[in-house]
Image (cartoon, rainbow, N blue to C red):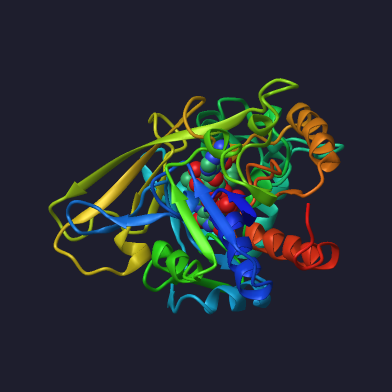
Length: 370
Ligand code: FAD
Ligand code: UDP
């Protein structure tokens, strides 16, 4: 009999396994249907010996000293500030859009003050900003929206930005200065030995038992447990009772080239003609020295493992129905990007898991029976 069964060994499940085992001294069985821990943040060495992220680029960034401090127990850090270029009209330009983006795209020599006037002349008045399209056209105008956002978003989500919530494109700021960093957070670092090594240290506790290639449905009746933490897709947990919640998937093409470097920055976005959305060269993220270099091409798709909840009003309404079912269950906690249908970054998932642990501490007395 385990005190806890935790489904999913990504950040949500692993943080909770670590907290419960180390702070409550209770036993945990952590399962995952994949063959490894780490969830979508998993990294590994490819055939050439280059450290790659199997499920696309993961850059750690947060404004929370508490979350950075929590992870620092399990890893040292490598300073890294993420920079991205977008291939637009045959040029490689900084994204988020900044002063250099506009000057190089239109061959201008604007100052920050002049750029403000430039945007003011182009932005559209939107009474109420509700969609991913509204956010961009009301900031930089329609032409830049079409060049940098519309095509990328249609590829990434399989729907037009006008059919997605504003939160999607609000993730990407617009800058009047020359700051070309993708994120503005105070803490931007990569785990020095990689994510998987950090997860292994987090889970290195004799009270944590790990079972891989194990699906919850296959084992749930065979493994006695007192309580359950579930970090998989919430609609699947309830056998799709109200119909499937849309999740967007990706397929990755990983390639290795026999040269030391091939891109000027880690990620190049392709908002125009290509079928893929972005290409990542991993050595920029890891700092690894190697005569070859490995990249991944991301092709969005409706089928495959669920990676992204799709933020729009009808999906949020459907999720609310599942959330109400989830709230009725005793001794079951739903945590993470798939189980709470939130487009969360890693630090937000860690924050949610740590908050869930505090709730568990308040509501579950040690050793109590279900
Ligand atoms: P997951 O990592 O998805 O883990 C859930 C686990 O549950 C999976 O391993 C799955 O196999 C398992 N599971 C599901 N159902 C079952 C079942 N029935 N039985 C057994 N196991 C099951 N965040 C950042 O902060 N920075 C970034 O740069 C960044 N880049 C990203 C790039 C991509 C392409 C993607 C897809 C996400 C990115 N993220 C990034 C977000 C980040 O991946 C997530 O915030 C985080 O990994 C979510 O953790 P999680 O534990 O909620 O879910
Ligand atoms: N986006 C875009 N063009 C870009 C970068 C982002 O249209 O060059 C939009 C797109 O809809 C994307 C969203 O902004 O899905 C959020 O971008 P982010 O880079 O945060 O996506 P993630 O890393 O989560 O895939």
